[in-house]
Figure 1: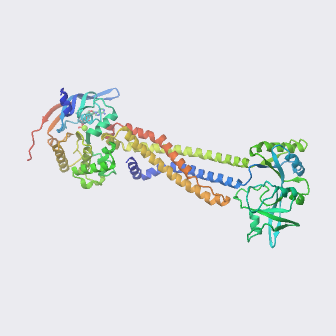
Figure 2 (figure 1 turned 135 degrees about the vertical axis):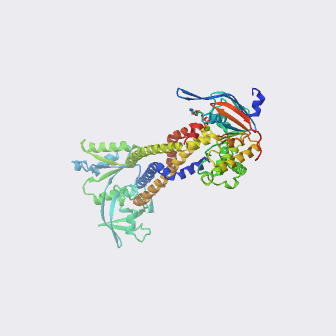
Figure 3 (figure 1 turned 135 degrees about the horizontal axis):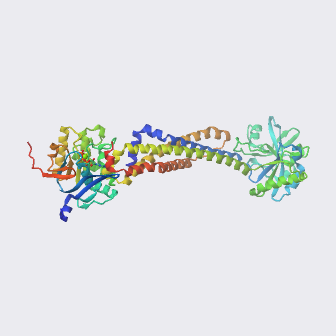
Length: 398
Length: 240
Ligand SMILES: Nc1ncnc2c1ncn2[C@@H]1O[C@H](COP(=O)(O)OP(=O)(O)OP(=O)(O)O)[C@@H](O)[C@H]1O
Ligand SMILES: [Mg+2]
């Protein structure tokens, strides 16, 4: 009864109602859209980084420093770095591109050094990954990533047991990795190409001593920040205590952390915009509700004369404000979901290949929460005014 | 009227009712001590010049306002010192209002208008509708149940308002100039309806400026300057 009366009033004044809730529609729409985008972006980044192992980190010299040559990490540093407590393994990161041939198929591919503990946690769809004995014995084997496999074996099928040729070298294919869920953040950092045991790589391709970067495997991912500092300190010590040498590091939690930081900042800004627009919208709603109470003073008088109690009048106007606010918030939510869903489908999913479920429940929660808060904050006073009217004066009102 | 049994059997008992409006420091005395007993089933017209206090008295009878002093028993209940919510409950249970300007809710069909008091009384939809249809039948508008006020003539709107006033089976029907907005012919129809209600045993109190209208009532009370100056039982009128 309260609801359909309120509905009748809002529909009778539909233009006014629509203008009144426009602010709410925009505010809630913006907040929900950003929320959907934030969730899908976070999901996309996690999807892209998902295969990068938690318990490894990478150290490389800062390429902008003056004495880059002195800062370079050397193969001969690795045994000392491997000896740091907590570090399980230290291996070089190197890769180059070359023509790779299998039978009549030729493709340009990256060839990279890999250890027994791989860069990316991708399961093998055929065969196996590089083993520790491959590393120990520097065997001439390789593992194909999914894209190289599709270039070299367009006809498909199990390629293990066949060989690829890279210049004068021949490597036996022992495995093929599954397709990674990425594309937008190419989180390879030296992995991702055709992998050969790093010992084989050193023997076949590294002429000097210095390497591009080094990768470290730790027993416990939570030690990574401390171990990164320990490795850098050790490198400086190995260069005779040169303090000026600059190194950079990369690990998964650092990337997810900084991306989360960006999202938090965006969320904060959008939250502030949302709050301001809701404040403005709320004042508009309060204004229109006060106008509505004034216009219907006589009606209120009649209702009171025939026996409506204060609470019943209060409730009537409160429901009306609630209906006004919730229609605004729900329309805003639908628009926000539509915009967020569209951008998500058109750009984020396309670019990253990662699909994240649209957070319907959270969007609904935001909309419903805003509706209740705005109604309570701005609908209560007009309803109270209506409830307090004196019936005689209200009946005399023209 | 000092007799307790009179108080409990009468519809309305005023004892030395006064009303003084206060506008800031300015005091406007309007009613100067009114004694009045209206028994159940009476049909009373209140007349008097403009400003004599008729509406003020009706507001007090209707529990829309409180007397400044004196005591008021409505249908045996002392309502002199009730708070707003208690007065609202009394209006809901014991009183039916008919206004000069009909005061129906716009954009709301007859049945919804008529059943509104029952809604405030917390009665369910089905029962409300059943009783609203019966009340509209009683005022001869059974076939207009789903018309909105702007689809009804003035007389029909006043009938809807009367049905609304009747729906809670009130002890007293109050009408402040019920025919003030109607033409002579329609007024006569409404007055005929009042007559019928009176014959059914309803208690009716009506304010009017129109001697002709007042003459339909069985008792005429005349006010002047906040005092009752005449209280006549009409001689039973015969048609002609
Ligand atoms: N709220 C108020 N504050 C001050 N004075 C008031 C108020 N209401 C009514 N009065 C005064 O009380 C007196 C009686 O008013 P009331 O409305 O009862 O007259 P009435 O007999 O109904 O007149 P009418 O026939 O014109 O309707 C008038 O002088 C009026 O000015
Ligand atoms: Mg009057």
